[in-house]
Image 1 (cartoon, helix red, strand yellow):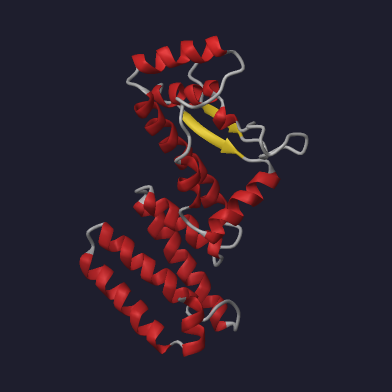
Image 2 (tube, helix red, strand yellow):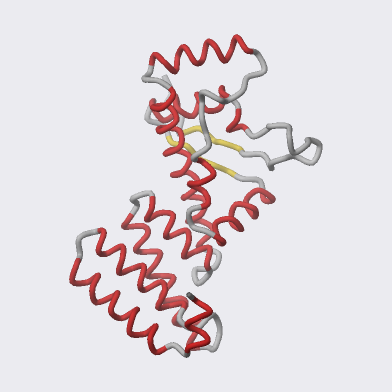
Length: 219
């Protein structure tokens, strides 16, 4: 049989203009969608997420405000509470869920796959402005998912881009040092302790030299 390159997951804006806030319409609230994602991953296929522009802007806004926002949101995905238009469909799917290890296993696999796919969306968005908070938080999102090599490389690029911006009198003073500090943290997670210490000491020393008003604003 032909191997599909992956499941293309199209997430609709939530809620659509024609629906009310109380009408659950997200595809991730539908049991078929959740179980199909699980089957896709179990079969060894890729999960690719494509967001409509309105939803993409909303996602990036949440990411900009807090690097952990995507993981917090996806933590609520639960096949056992997902809906089906036909109750018999849910009963049948839940039977299959039990056969493959239960709801907890399905949820773990699906949430991990969704986080990987959303992190890819975030990493692509980071390329639009490497000095931005979105780019830095995309790196932290990758870090939290254990994608340390990608996270470190992106943090290093954020730090470099912010240095250039600060030298030109643009951006926030100390922004490059913030990114450099995260580079040090990631290096420590990778076991590169000497390099991590040097990066963290550089960040701390540089931060101490930032004028008080700017330093306080970054805290």
